[in-house]
Amino acid sequence: MTRVRAWLQAGVLIAAGVAAQAGAERVYRVQAGDTLYALARASGTTAADLARRNGLNGGTLHVGTVLRLPGRGAAPASHVRPAVLPARAANLPVYQSGMAVYYGGRRDTRTPLTAAHLSLPFGTWVEVRHARTGRSVLVMINDRGPFGRRDRVIDLSTAAARALGITGEGVAPVTLRIAHRP
Image (tube, rainbow, N blue to C red; front, side):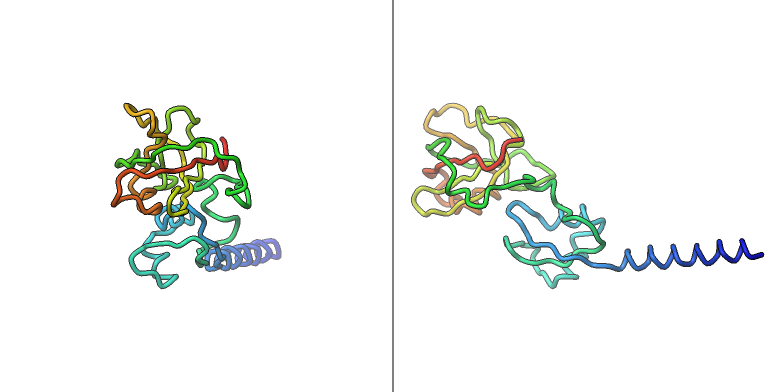
């Protein structure tokens, strides 16, 4: 009888520990390229739940915003951006200069901030800086292009073009810096 009681007590303690972990929250600071959907999926919940939990309306995330995520452990979106980014991408050498255009972009579950480049390896993270405005965006290379015009160095997804502020222009002068290679 003593063994049975010990097993029952152990089971109750384990169940209590699991329940405590399930209700635990952690904080996460939004990084460039994070999406509510990707953070929710990595946290094992829905985008609607994360929006409700953090008082978000519209689903727009801003870099640096602190979110409350369910569960414990490491930041859930390590697959959303490179594991290591330089502290100041502006200090990196310019890899290429030319014109950026935008197109619909090849969808990627890791981030909506994607781009096409003729030669950079897929999975490379590039800082694209608008030469006139100074705005910049961090994009992941997941497609090939642009084709047909030698002055065009990168094709941006619509989300990346919107973040850079070139959707009205369509084409803009940019500089590219390699932030992270796969």
